[in-house]
Image 1 (spheres, rainbow, N blue to C red):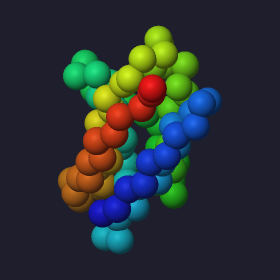
Image 2: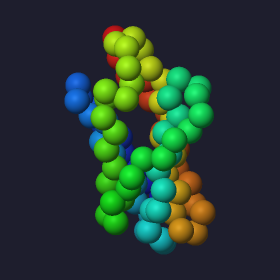
Image 3: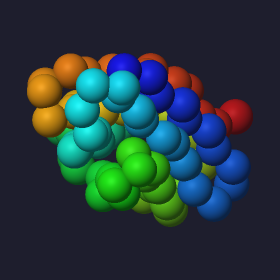
Length: 81
């Protein structure tokens, strides 16, 4: 399973692909808080508005994608100044 995540000032976008089974869920954990679900399209694309991040300080995100066969890929990234 592979995942790419990128950001600009308006949104965080990503694509999670598994060559064995479709990706069915993407969760994001923001600054060590509780993980929350992000809608994922049939092709594995997902988007998260940066407005959800709140204040303009540095944020740590953990993005996890899971396929129908329970394969998981995780990306840890920092966003902000």
